[in-house]
Image (cartoon, rainbow, N blue to C red; front, side, top):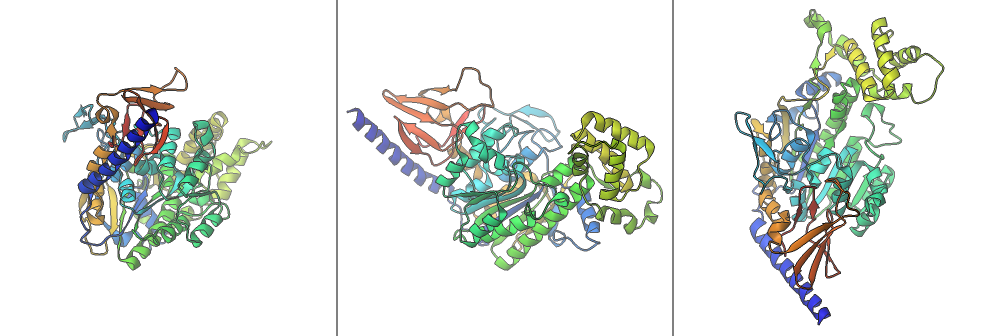
Length: 559
Protein backbone atom coordinates (compact mmCIF):
# COMPACT_ATOMS: atom_id res chain seq x y z
CA UNK A 1 0.00 0.00 0.00
CA UNK A 2 2.83 2.38 0.90
CA UNK A 3 4.58 1.90 -2.45
CA UNK A 4 1.25 2.32 -4.25
CA UNK A 5 0.69 5.59 -2.38
CA UNK A 6 4.10 6.85 -3.48
CA UNK A 7 3.38 5.93 -7.10
CA UNK A 8 0.02 7.67 -6.96
CA UNK A 9 1.61 10.77 -5.43
CA UNK A 10 4.30 10.88 -8.10
CA UNK A 11 1.63 10.42 -10.79
CA UNK A 12 -0.34 13.31 -9.33
CA UNK A 13 2.84 15.38 -9.21
CA UNK A 14 3.56 14.72 -12.89
CA UNK A 15 -0.06 15.50 -13.81
CA UNK A 16 0.09 18.73 -11.82
CA UNK A 17 3.35 19.66 -13.52
CA UNK A 18 1.82 19.04 -16.94
CA UNK A 19 -1.26 21.11 -16.12
CA UNK A 20 0.98 23.81 -14.73
CA UNK A 21 3.02 23.87 -17.91
CA UNK A 22 -0.17 24.34 -19.93
CA UNK A 23 -1.21 27.18 -17.62
CA UNK A 24 2.20 28.83 -17.98
CA UNK A 25 1.97 28.65 -21.75
CA UNK A 26 -1.55 30.08 -21.68
CA UNK A 27 -0.65 32.95 -19.36
CA UNK A 28 2.80 33.80 -20.62
CA UNK A 29 2.71 32.93 -24.32
CA UNK A 30 4.31 35.93 -26.04
CA UNK A 31 2.66 37.73 -28.89
CA UNK A 32 4.38 37.29 -32.21
CA UNK A 33 6.99 39.98 -32.51
CA UNK A 34 5.98 42.44 -35.24
CA UNK A 35 9.65 43.06 -35.96
CA UNK A 36 10.71 39.38 -36.04
CA UNK A 37 13.49 39.90 -33.51
CA UNK A 38 15.09 36.50 -32.87
CA UNK A 39 18.17 37.58 -30.94
CA UNK A 40 18.78 40.07 -28.15
CA UNK A 41 22.20 41.37 -27.10
CA UNK A 42 22.43 43.54 -23.99
CA UNK A 43 25.77 45.29 -23.46
CA UNK A 44 26.75 47.04 -20.22
CA UNK A 45 29.99 48.99 -19.72
CA UNK A 46 29.80 48.93 -15.94
CA UNK A 47 30.33 52.31 -14.27
CA UNK A 48 30.98 54.12 -17.56
CA UNK A 49 30.38 57.86 -17.68
CA UNK A 50 29.66 60.10 -20.65
CA UNK A 51 32.98 61.79 -19.85
CA UNK A 52 34.75 58.45 -20.34
CA UNK A 53 32.95 58.13 -23.66
CA UNK A 54 34.45 61.48 -24.70
CA UNK A 55 37.90 60.55 -23.40
CA UNK A 56 37.74 57.23 -25.25
CA UNK A 57 37.07 59.06 -28.50
CA UNK A 58 40.11 61.31 -28.02
CA UNK A 59 42.18 58.24 -27.12
CA UNK A 60 41.01 56.82 -30.44
CA UNK A 61 42.79 59.76 -32.11
CA UNK A 62 39.50 61.62 -32.44
CA UNK A 63 38.00 58.95 -34.67
CA UNK A 64 34.40 57.78 -34.04
CA UNK A 65 33.86 54.93 -31.64
CA UNK A 66 31.72 51.93 -32.57
CA UNK A 67 29.16 53.32 -30.13
CA UNK A 68 28.95 56.79 -31.62
CA UNK A 69 26.60 56.22 -34.54
CA UNK A 70 24.22 54.17 -32.38
CA UNK A 71 23.71 56.55 -29.44
CA UNK A 72 20.05 57.54 -29.22
CA UNK A 73 19.56 59.12 -25.83
CA UNK A 74 20.24 59.02 -22.10
CA UNK A 75 19.11 56.74 -19.29
CA UNK A 76 18.08 57.93 -15.82
CA UNK A 77 19.56 55.17 -13.69
CA UNK A 78 19.16 54.93 -9.94
CA UNK A 79 18.12 52.65 -7.07
CA UNK A 80 14.65 52.18 -5.64
CA UNK A 81 15.55 54.32 -2.62
CA UNK A 82 18.56 56.40 -3.72
CA UNK A 83 19.41 58.70 -6.65
CA UNK A 84 22.91 57.17 -6.87
CA UNK A 85 22.89 53.61 -8.12
CA UNK A 86 24.78 50.49 -7.12
CA UNK A 87 25.66 47.86 -9.74
CA UNK A 88 23.50 45.16 -8.16
CA UNK A 89 20.15 46.99 -8.21
CA UNK A 90 20.76 49.02 -11.38
CA UNK A 91 21.79 45.92 -13.31
CA UNK A 92 18.76 44.19 -11.81
CA UNK A 93 16.57 46.96 -13.18
CA UNK A 94 17.81 46.30 -16.70
CA UNK A 95 17.28 42.56 -16.18
CA UNK A 96 13.83 42.69 -14.55
CA UNK A 97 12.18 46.03 -15.25
CA UNK A 98 11.98 47.00 -11.57
CA UNK A 99 14.32 49.16 -9.52
CA UNK A 100 15.75 47.59 -6.41
CA UNK A 101 17.96 48.70 -3.55
CA UNK A 102 21.61 48.61 -2.59
CA UNK A 103 23.07 45.12 -2.80
CA UNK A 104 19.95 43.40 -4.18
CA UNK A 105 20.37 40.92 -7.05
CA UNK A 106 17.15 40.51 -9.13
CA UNK A 107 15.18 40.75 -5.90
CA UNK A 108 12.25 43.01 -5.09
CA UNK A 109 13.29 45.86 -2.80
CA UNK A 110 12.29 46.20 0.83
CA UNK A 111 12.33 49.98 0.51
CA UNK A 112 11.53 52.52 -2.20
CA UNK A 113 10.94 56.26 -2.55
CA UNK A 114 8.25 58.48 -4.01
CA UNK A 115 8.70 61.20 -6.64
CA UNK A 116 9.92 63.60 -3.94
CA UNK A 117 12.57 61.12 -2.78
CA UNK A 118 10.72 60.27 0.44
CA UNK A 119 11.47 56.69 1.40
CA UNK A 120 8.82 54.14 2.34
CA UNK A 121 8.78 50.43 3.18
CA UNK A 122 7.56 47.86 0.65
CA UNK A 123 4.79 45.47 1.83
CA UNK A 124 6.01 42.13 3.16
CA UNK A 125 4.17 40.31 0.37
CA UNK A 126 6.60 41.78 -2.17
CA UNK A 127 9.79 42.63 -0.26
CA UNK A 128 12.71 40.24 -0.88
CA UNK A 129 10.81 38.27 -3.52
CA UNK A 130 12.92 37.09 -6.49
CA UNK A 131 12.16 38.76 -9.81
CA UNK A 132 12.23 36.89 -13.13
CA UNK A 133 14.86 38.16 -15.56
CA UNK A 134 15.19 38.66 -19.32
CA UNK A 135 17.69 35.82 -19.57
CA UNK A 136 15.38 33.48 -17.67
CA UNK A 137 12.46 34.43 -19.92
CA UNK A 138 14.54 33.84 -23.04
CA UNK A 139 15.62 30.44 -21.71
CA UNK A 140 11.98 29.55 -20.93
CA UNK A 141 11.08 30.45 -24.50
CA UNK A 142 13.68 28.01 -25.82
CA UNK A 143 16.36 30.50 -26.82
CA UNK A 144 20.04 29.80 -26.28
CA UNK A 145 21.44 32.01 -23.52
CA UNK A 146 24.88 33.37 -22.79
CA UNK A 147 26.96 35.90 -20.89
CA UNK A 148 30.42 37.36 -21.50
CA UNK A 149 32.09 39.26 -18.65
CA UNK A 150 35.53 40.28 -17.41
CA UNK A 151 34.68 40.00 -13.71
CA UNK A 152 34.04 36.71 -11.88
CA UNK A 153 30.70 35.22 -12.82
CA UNK A 154 28.88 35.52 -9.43
CA UNK A 155 29.66 39.24 -9.38
CA UNK A 156 26.82 41.78 -9.44
CA UNK A 157 25.93 42.29 -13.10
CA UNK A 158 26.10 38.69 -14.38
CA UNK A 159 24.33 37.57 -11.21
CA UNK A 160 21.59 40.14 -11.92
CA UNK A 161 20.56 38.20 -15.03
CA UNK A 162 20.67 34.69 -13.57
CA UNK A 163 20.53 34.71 -9.76
CA UNK A 164 18.46 36.14 -6.91
CA UNK A 165 19.72 37.44 -3.57
CA UNK A 166 19.25 40.49 -1.33
CA UNK A 167 22.99 40.38 -0.66
CA UNK A 168 25.34 40.68 -3.65
CA UNK A 169 28.29 39.55 -1.53
CA UNK A 170 26.93 36.05 -0.94
CA UNK A 171 29.04 34.72 -3.80
CA UNK A 172 28.84 31.08 -2.75
CA UNK A 173 25.04 31.10 -2.73
CA UNK A 174 24.85 33.07 -5.98
CA UNK A 175 27.32 30.78 -7.75
CA UNK A 176 25.32 27.76 -6.61
CA UNK A 177 22.15 29.20 -8.14
CA UNK A 178 23.92 30.02 -11.39
CA UNK A 179 25.41 26.52 -11.67
CA UNK A 180 22.14 24.73 -10.88
CA UNK A 181 20.10 26.80 -13.32
CA UNK A 182 22.78 27.89 -15.78
CA UNK A 183 22.91 29.84 -18.98
CA UNK A 184 24.17 27.75 -21.90
CA UNK A 185 27.36 29.71 -22.48
CA UNK A 186 29.44 31.71 -20.01
CA UNK A 187 32.82 33.26 -20.83
CA UNK A 188 34.84 35.27 -18.33
CA UNK A 189 36.38 34.83 -14.90
CA UNK A 190 35.52 32.93 -11.75
CA UNK A 191 36.86 29.37 -12.08
CA UNK A 192 37.44 29.45 -8.32
CA UNK A 193 33.70 29.03 -7.66
CA UNK A 194 33.51 25.96 -9.89
CA UNK A 195 36.74 24.37 -8.70
CA UNK A 196 35.99 24.90 -4.99
CA UNK A 197 32.28 24.04 -5.09
CA UNK A 198 32.72 20.85 -3.04
CA UNK A 199 33.31 23.12 -0.05
CA UNK A 200 29.77 24.42 -0.63
CA UNK A 201 28.34 20.91 -0.66
CA UNK A 202 27.95 20.27 -4.38
CA UNK A 203 30.05 19.43 -7.43
CA UNK A 204 29.75 22.29 -9.92
CA UNK A 205 31.60 20.50 -12.70
CA UNK A 206 29.30 17.51 -12.36
CA UNK A 207 26.22 19.73 -12.31
CA UNK A 208 27.32 21.42 -15.54
CA UNK A 209 28.16 18.08 -17.10
CA UNK A 210 24.69 16.75 -16.21
CA UNK A 211 23.30 19.63 -18.27
CA UNK A 212 25.62 18.84 -21.21
CA UNK A 213 27.67 21.98 -20.53
CA UNK A 214 31.42 21.68 -21.12
CA UNK A 215 33.77 23.38 -18.67
CA UNK A 216 37.20 24.69 -19.63
CA UNK A 217 39.80 27.16 -18.43
CA UNK A 218 41.46 27.34 -21.86
CA UNK A 219 40.25 29.79 -24.49
CA UNK A 220 41.86 27.65 -27.21
CA UNK A 221 39.81 24.69 -26.02
CA UNK A 222 36.67 26.84 -25.94
CA UNK A 223 37.32 27.83 -29.55
CA UNK A 224 37.74 24.16 -30.50
CA UNK A 225 34.46 23.23 -28.81
CA UNK A 226 32.58 25.95 -30.68
CA UNK A 227 34.25 24.99 -33.97
CA UNK A 228 32.96 21.47 -33.33
CA UNK A 229 29.41 22.72 -33.04
CA UNK A 230 29.19 22.91 -29.25
CA UNK A 231 27.47 26.02 -27.86
CA UNK A 232 26.92 24.78 -24.32
CA UNK A 233 30.12 25.66 -22.52
CA UNK A 234 31.49 27.60 -19.58
CA UNK A 235 34.93 29.03 -20.26
CA UNK A 236 36.37 30.61 -17.12
CA UNK A 237 39.84 31.95 -17.85
CA UNK A 238 40.87 33.28 -14.45
CA UNK A 239 40.29 32.09 -10.86
CA UNK A 240 38.54 35.38 -10.06
CA UNK A 241 38.39 38.56 -12.16
CA UNK A 242 40.26 38.84 -15.44
CA UNK A 243 43.10 41.32 -15.91
CA UNK A 244 42.62 44.91 -17.02
CA UNK A 245 43.00 45.24 -20.78
CA UNK A 246 46.18 47.33 -20.42
CA UNK A 247 47.71 44.57 -18.24
CA UNK A 248 46.34 41.57 -20.13
CA UNK A 249 48.75 38.98 -21.54
CA UNK A 250 47.20 37.99 -24.89
CA UNK A 251 48.73 34.53 -24.55
CA UNK A 252 47.10 34.00 -21.18
CA UNK A 253 43.65 35.58 -21.40
CA UNK A 254 41.29 36.42 -24.27
CA UNK A 255 40.04 39.96 -24.81
CA UNK A 256 36.42 40.98 -24.37
CA UNK A 257 36.24 41.35 -28.15
CA UNK A 258 37.49 37.79 -28.69
CA UNK A 259 35.09 36.32 -26.14
CA UNK A 260 32.17 38.25 -27.62
CA UNK A 261 33.00 37.08 -31.12
CA UNK A 262 33.17 33.46 -29.95
CA UNK A 263 29.89 33.77 -28.05
CA UNK A 264 28.08 35.07 -31.13
CA UNK A 265 29.61 32.33 -33.27
CA UNK A 266 28.34 29.70 -30.83
CA UNK A 267 24.89 31.09 -30.07
CA UNK A 268 23.90 32.37 -33.52
CA UNK A 269 23.66 28.84 -34.91
CA UNK A 270 20.78 27.95 -32.59
CA UNK A 271 17.34 27.50 -34.17
CA UNK A 272 15.26 29.59 -31.76
CA UNK A 273 17.66 32.51 -31.52
CA UNK A 274 19.59 33.65 -28.47
CA UNK A 275 19.91 36.12 -25.61
CA UNK A 276 23.41 37.39 -24.80
CA UNK A 277 24.59 39.79 -22.10
CA UNK A 278 28.07 41.31 -22.50
CA UNK A 279 29.62 43.33 -19.68
CA UNK A 280 32.74 45.45 -19.69
CA UNK A 281 32.93 44.71 -15.99
CA UNK A 282 36.19 46.35 -15.00
CA UNK A 283 35.57 49.79 -16.46
CA UNK A 284 33.88 50.26 -13.11
CA UNK A 285 36.71 48.68 -11.12
CA UNK A 286 39.26 51.02 -12.65
CA UNK A 287 37.05 54.04 -12.06
CA UNK A 288 36.53 53.05 -8.41
CA UNK A 289 40.29 53.43 -7.89
CA UNK A 290 40.47 56.48 -10.17
CA UNK A 291 42.86 54.26 -12.12
CA UNK A 292 42.84 56.19 -15.39
CA UNK A 293 44.73 53.73 -17.65
CA UNK A 294 42.70 50.80 -16.30
CA UNK A 295 39.34 52.48 -16.90
CA UNK A 296 39.99 54.04 -20.29
CA UNK A 297 41.66 51.02 -21.92
CA UNK A 298 38.94 48.69 -20.60
CA UNK A 299 36.34 51.04 -22.07
CA UNK A 300 38.11 50.99 -25.45
CA UNK A 301 38.16 47.18 -25.26
CA UNK A 302 34.42 47.27 -24.60
CA UNK A 303 33.88 49.54 -27.61
CA UNK A 304 35.69 47.02 -29.82
CA UNK A 305 33.26 44.37 -28.57
CA UNK A 306 30.42 46.75 -29.48
CA UNK A 307 31.86 46.86 -33.00
CA UNK A 308 31.72 43.07 -33.23
CA UNK A 309 28.11 43.03 -32.02
CA UNK A 310 26.92 45.83 -34.32
CA UNK A 311 28.56 44.21 -37.35
CA UNK A 312 26.77 40.95 -36.60
CA UNK A 313 23.42 42.63 -35.92
CA UNK A 314 23.46 44.67 -39.12
CA UNK A 315 24.27 41.61 -41.22
CA UNK A 316 21.84 39.34 -39.37
CA UNK A 317 18.81 41.63 -39.63
CA UNK A 318 16.97 39.91 -36.75
CA UNK A 319 18.97 41.09 -33.75
CA UNK A 320 18.13 43.80 -31.24
CA UNK A 321 21.11 45.41 -29.47
CA UNK A 322 20.90 47.73 -26.47
CA UNK A 323 23.98 49.29 -24.87
CA UNK A 324 23.94 51.33 -21.67
CA UNK A 325 26.03 51.69 -18.49
CA UNK A 326 24.30 50.74 -15.25
CA UNK A 327 25.60 53.89 -13.50
CA UNK A 328 28.57 56.27 -13.48
CA UNK A 329 31.62 55.75 -11.28
CA UNK A 330 34.35 58.08 -10.11
CA UNK A 331 33.10 61.42 -11.42
CA UNK A 332 35.73 61.68 -14.15
CA UNK A 333 36.46 65.03 -15.79
CA UNK A 334 38.60 65.91 -18.80
CA UNK A 335 40.65 68.58 -17.14
CA UNK A 336 41.62 69.21 -13.53
CA UNK A 337 42.90 72.06 -11.35
CA UNK A 338 46.17 72.12 -13.24
CA UNK A 339 44.04 73.59 -16.02
CA UNK A 340 42.23 76.24 -13.99
CA UNK A 341 43.67 78.60 -16.57
CA UNK A 342 45.06 77.87 -20.00
CA UNK A 343 42.63 75.01 -20.63
CA UNK A 344 41.63 76.34 -24.07
CA UNK A 345 45.27 76.66 -25.09
CA UNK A 346 46.16 73.07 -24.11
CA UNK A 347 46.54 70.82 -27.16
CA UNK A 348 45.09 67.37 -27.68
CA UNK A 349 48.65 66.03 -27.88
CA UNK A 350 49.46 67.43 -24.46
CA UNK A 351 46.26 66.03 -22.97
CA UNK A 352 46.07 62.56 -24.46
CA UNK A 353 49.39 61.42 -25.92
CA UNK A 354 50.97 60.71 -22.49
CA UNK A 355 47.94 58.59 -21.59
CA UNK A 356 48.17 56.66 -24.86
CA UNK A 357 51.75 55.72 -23.95
CA UNK A 358 50.82 54.16 -20.59
CA UNK A 359 51.97 50.55 -20.24
CA UNK A 360 50.21 49.40 -17.07
CA UNK A 361 47.38 50.16 -14.69
CA UNK A 362 48.11 51.93 -11.44
CA UNK A 363 46.99 48.76 -9.67
CA UNK A 364 49.52 46.55 -11.43
CA UNK A 365 52.27 49.13 -10.83
CA UNK A 366 51.64 49.01 -7.08
CA UNK A 367 51.37 45.22 -6.95
CA UNK A 368 54.67 44.77 -8.77
CA UNK A 369 56.44 46.97 -6.22
CA UNK A 370 55.65 44.41 -3.53
CA UNK A 371 55.68 41.23 -5.60
CA UNK A 372 59.18 40.26 -4.51
CA UNK A 373 61.62 41.37 -1.79
CA UNK A 374 64.06 44.08 -2.80
CA UNK A 375 66.98 45.84 -1.14
CA UNK A 376 66.36 49.03 -3.10
CA UNK A 377 64.57 51.85 -1.28
CA UNK A 378 60.85 52.03 -2.02
CA UNK A 379 61.12 55.58 -3.38
CA UNK A 380 63.72 54.50 -5.92
CA UNK A 381 61.69 51.51 -7.06
CA UNK A 382 58.54 53.57 -7.29
CA UNK A 383 60.21 56.27 -9.40
CA UNK A 384 61.61 53.64 -11.76
CA UNK A 385 58.16 52.04 -12.17
CA UNK A 386 56.43 55.34 -12.75
CA UNK A 387 58.94 56.32 -15.44
CA UNK A 388 58.78 52.91 -17.15
CA UNK A 389 54.98 52.59 -17.08
CA UNK A 390 53.84 56.20 -17.45
CA UNK A 391 56.77 58.20 -18.83
CA UNK A 392 56.86 60.54 -15.83
CA UNK A 393 60.51 61.41 -15.18
CA UNK A 394 60.19 62.69 -11.65
CA UNK A 395 57.58 62.81 -8.88
CA UNK A 396 57.85 65.80 -6.57
CA UNK A 397 59.44 65.26 -3.16
CA UNK A 398 56.27 65.93 -1.15
CA UNK A 399 54.23 63.58 -3.34
CA UNK A 400 56.91 60.90 -3.10
CA UNK A 401 57.05 61.16 0.69
CA UNK A 402 53.27 60.89 0.91
CA UNK A 403 53.18 57.88 -1.43
CA UNK A 404 55.91 56.02 0.39
CA UNK A 405 54.24 56.60 3.76
CA UNK A 406 50.95 55.15 2.51
CA UNK A 407 52.62 52.23 0.74
CA UNK A 408 54.81 51.30 3.69
CA UNK A 409 51.63 50.89 5.71
CA UNK A 410 49.23 49.50 3.09
CA UNK A 411 51.70 47.59 0.86
CA UNK A 412 49.86 46.57 -2.36
CA UNK A 413 46.39 47.35 -1.01
CA UNK A 414 43.68 49.64 -2.31
CA UNK A 415 44.83 52.67 -0.33
CA UNK A 416 48.20 52.50 -2.06
CA UNK A 417 46.59 52.30 -5.50
CA UNK A 418 44.36 55.28 -4.76
CA UNK A 419 47.24 57.31 -3.37
CA UNK A 420 49.19 56.69 -6.58
CA UNK A 421 46.09 57.61 -8.62
CA UNK A 422 45.77 60.90 -6.79
CA UNK A 423 49.31 61.86 -7.75
CA UNK A 424 49.53 60.54 -11.31
CA UNK A 425 46.15 61.81 -12.51
CA UNK A 426 47.40 65.35 -11.96
CA UNK A 427 50.16 64.71 -14.48
CA UNK A 428 47.53 63.51 -16.97
CA UNK A 429 45.30 66.58 -16.47
CA UNK A 430 42.35 64.38 -15.48
CA UNK A 431 40.15 64.89 -12.42
CA UNK A 432 37.95 62.64 -10.31
CA UNK A 433 35.42 63.55 -7.63
CA UNK A 434 34.86 60.25 -5.81
CA UNK A 435 36.05 56.68 -5.33
CA UNK A 436 32.37 55.65 -5.35
CA UNK A 437 29.51 55.97 -7.81
CA UNK A 438 27.97 59.22 -8.99
CA UNK A 439 24.40 59.86 -10.04
CA UNK A 440 24.49 61.31 -13.54
CA UNK A 441 22.52 60.04 -16.53
CA UNK A 442 24.23 57.51 -18.79
CA UNK A 443 24.21 57.13 -22.58
CA UNK A 444 21.89 54.76 -24.44
CA UNK A 445 22.93 53.17 -27.73
CA UNK A 446 20.91 50.69 -29.74
CA UNK A 447 20.41 48.87 -33.02
CA UNK A 448 17.02 47.66 -34.23
CA UNK A 449 16.70 46.24 -37.76
CA UNK A 450 13.36 48.02 -38.27
CA UNK A 451 14.30 51.23 -36.51
CA UNK A 452 11.92 50.68 -33.56
CA UNK A 453 14.39 52.34 -31.20
CA UNK A 454 13.98 54.33 -28.02
CA UNK A 455 15.19 57.88 -28.76
CA UNK A 456 14.83 60.10 -25.70
CA UNK A 457 15.54 60.33 -21.98
CA UNK A 458 14.73 56.82 -20.79
CA UNK A 459 13.95 55.59 -17.29
CA UNK A 460 15.98 52.50 -16.41
CA UNK A 461 12.76 50.59 -15.65
CA UNK A 462 11.70 50.93 -19.30
CA UNK A 463 14.51 48.86 -20.81
CA UNK A 464 13.35 45.33 -19.92
CA UNK A 465 9.70 45.86 -20.96
CA UNK A 466 10.91 47.36 -24.24
CA UNK A 467 13.07 44.30 -24.91
CA UNK A 468 10.20 41.95 -24.04
CA UNK A 469 7.87 43.74 -26.46
CA UNK A 470 10.35 43.82 -29.30
CA UNK A 471 11.58 40.24 -28.90
CA UNK A 472 8.21 38.74 -28.01
CA UNK A 473 9.35 37.54 -24.60
CA UNK A 474 6.79 36.62 -21.92
CA UNK A 475 5.72 39.09 -19.24
CA UNK A 476 8.35 39.08 -16.50
CA UNK A 477 6.00 39.98 -13.64
CA UNK A 478 3.70 37.06 -14.45
CA UNK A 479 6.66 34.70 -14.56
CA UNK A 480 7.89 36.01 -11.20
CA UNK A 481 4.53 35.16 -9.62
CA UNK A 482 4.52 31.66 -11.11
CA UNK A 483 8.13 30.62 -10.64
CA UNK A 484 9.07 32.44 -7.44
CA UNK A 485 6.06 32.00 -5.19
CA UNK A 486 6.59 32.11 -1.39
CA UNK A 487 6.48 28.66 0.14
CA UNK A 488 3.56 29.64 2.38
CA UNK A 489 1.41 30.43 -0.67
CA UNK A 490 2.32 27.16 -2.41
CA UNK A 491 1.72 25.03 0.70
CA UNK A 492 -0.58 27.20 2.85
CA UNK A 493 -1.68 24.41 5.19
CA UNK A 494 1.51 22.37 5.35
CA UNK A 495 4.04 22.23 8.16
CA UNK A 496 7.61 22.78 7.06
CA UNK A 497 11.04 23.25 8.59
CA UNK A 498 14.52 24.15 7.40
CA UNK A 499 17.21 21.63 8.34
CA UNK A 500 20.74 23.00 8.74
CA UNK A 501 24.10 21.32 9.09
CA UNK A 502 24.25 22.59 12.66
CA UNK A 503 22.19 24.78 14.96
CA UNK A 504 24.50 27.76 14.52
CA UNK A 505 23.73 29.38 11.18
CA UNK A 506 23.08 32.80 9.66
CA UNK A 507 21.26 34.27 6.68
CA UNK A 508 24.17 33.57 4.35
CA UNK A 509 24.02 29.81 4.99
CA UNK A 510 21.68 27.59 2.99
CA UNK A 511 19.68 24.89 4.78
CA UNK A 512 20.65 21.37 3.79
CA UNK A 513 17.01 21.03 2.77
CA UNK A 514 13.52 22.21 3.63
CA UNK A 515 11.18 19.41 4.72
CA UNK A 516 7.47 19.85 4.04
CA UNK A 517 4.75 17.61 5.40
CA UNK A 518 2.18 17.78 2.61
CA UNK A 519 -0.20 15.32 4.23
CA UNK A 520 -0.05 12.26 6.39
CA UNK A 521 2.71 10.01 5.05
CA UNK A 522 3.74 12.43 2.29
CA UNK A 523 6.95 14.39 2.76
CA UNK A 524 8.61 16.70 0.29
CA UNK A 525 12.24 17.71 0.62
CA UNK A 526 13.37 20.78 -1.30
CA UNK A 527 17.08 21.47 -1.78
CA UNK A 528 17.51 25.26 -1.75
CA UNK A 529 19.09 27.11 -4.68
CA UNK A 530 18.83 24.04 -6.89
CA UNK A 531 16.10 22.56 -9.08
CA UNK A 532 16.05 19.34 -7.06
CA UNK A 533 13.48 17.91 -4.67
CA UNK A 534 12.44 14.54 -3.25
CA UNK A 535 8.89 13.31 -2.79
CA UNK A 536 8.90 10.48 -0.27
CA UNK A 537 12.58 9.91 -1.21
CA UNK A 538 11.86 9.81 -4.96
CA UNK A 539 14.07 12.32 -6.78
CA UNK A 540 12.29 15.04 -8.75
CA UNK A 541 13.63 17.71 -11.09
CA UNK A 542 11.57 20.87 -10.84
CA UNK A 543 10.82 23.18 -13.79
CA UNK A 544 12.53 26.04 -11.99
CA UNK A 545 15.02 26.72 -9.26
CA UNK A 546 13.99 26.98 -5.60
CA UNK A 547 15.46 30.20 -4.24
CA UNK A 548 16.50 30.46 -0.60
CA UNK A 549 17.82 33.99 -0.02
CA UNK A 550 18.09 34.25 3.76
CA UNK A 551 14.70 35.96 3.96
CA UNK A 552 12.48 33.20 2.64
CA UNK A 553 12.08 30.21 0.34
CA UNK A 554 10.53 30.74 -3.10
CA UNK A 555 9.64 27.98 -5.54
CA UNK A 556 7.61 27.20 -8.66
CA UNK A 557 3.91 27.12 -7.83
CA UNK A 558 3.28 23.67 -9.26
CA UNK A 559 2.06 21.68 -6.29
